[in-house]
Length: 359
Ligand SMILES: Nc1ncnc2c1ncn2[C@@H]1O[C@H](COP(=O)(O)OP(=O)(O)OP(=O)(O)O)[C@@H](O)[C@H]1O
Image (tube, rainbow, N blue to C red; front, side, top):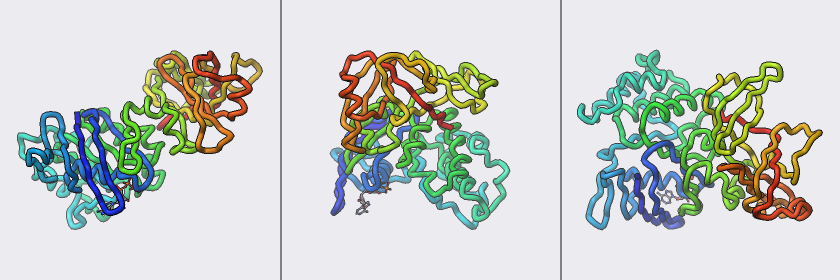
């Protein structure tokens, strides 16, 4: 576990976070601008001086009550920021060597060759960093952070400075890191699509405090959080490509947790591949019986679990429908809630117009 108990006060902002985070997978820090995501990350690294405790497993990095404060450069962490500060006068190889030299041979757990391969930068090794594209620079910056064999990787909006095509270039590398290195990553982002694609766990912040924390799927299905997501409110489901229909260019995606499947546009993923689906609340409607004569192909039997007002507009409500062990959220009008007499426990059908494959 990564145990955090930190307090810090600036003149117009205070941070107070007491949280245990899993020491595996990607945990995204998410929340509006100014809520304290970067400050929390910097405090964990020891770069911002908060009061309290930070530990990673049995390693204590900070414990003010016992006079412990390991300086940032002696914490086993990698730190990647939006605009990588690579050495401009050195080539990529020497930039990586710099990270490597900081690490004693006994502490080198991640071989540099593996890092270079993982990030697909072998062909760039002799290039000066000033000649790299934005996406390449970020891949080198991540490689340099990994060259020190950290036990924790901190990433602060690592893709915020990249345009959409560069993001699409870098994202698969982040996914590979995630899959192939058992290295916990704390990932600051205010882009929900990035979070929905990458994160396993989610820490939602508001005004320096934790508003919600837990697995991505659980936190995304809470009704008290979507208001901050506005139109992007919706759940994330884990699925697997079960069948491809060449005639209609559709793929059948099985979602074991929901004991159901969806038909979605075929993106040429092979049968058997795991995929992540995003089901937006605005694409889900509710009926009391299965429908025929509708263009909507995805109808899921479920049970109303909770209903809440939607801060997006007073006419709207959010309804969480339990489907097996999973849930979807529907955005409907309050008039529909009234007309259908929706209430917790009621069996309903969730009609899902579209599901987006996160890729
Ligand atoms: N060194 C500092 N001195 C005073 N105030 C600071 C300092 N660093 C950050 N703050 C303030 O703390 C608050 C939280 O800032 P922080 O950068 O952590 O937010 P954030 O959630 O990462 O925002 P963004 O998504 O815009 O990057 C802001 O109001 C910011 O102005």
